[in-house]
Image (cartoon, rainbow, N blue to C red):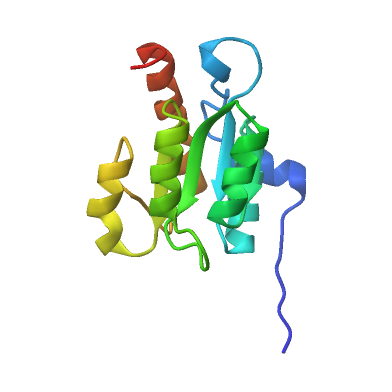
Length: 160
């Protein structure tokens, strides 16, 4: 069995797929560097595609494939503004459990839950600012939603 994956050259792909308003929101709303997003997804191709796209948008992106790995990443980096996690992470901690842990340990982080399973929407709404981000989603739409949430965080100020 042979599988092929046709990819555009990096420069043309980035130019075509970047959103019109592609300036990344800065950490804490200032100029101290790009906002940091932790992408947690057990399906490697999805994780790589999302992380690469967000990097082309100018964000600093960290990656994890499990909830436990994500906890370790949080332990090594105090400047994560957005946690983007799939709900079904395969083994170990699921996305709901990770979101609850993150909410308790890092109350200022914006949590975005994703899933291809619609029935997860109600529980997701209890854990994050906006409803579940349903798969499949266009990368441009994801980047715009992240930008909106970071801008809301910047305007709300610490602790809001």
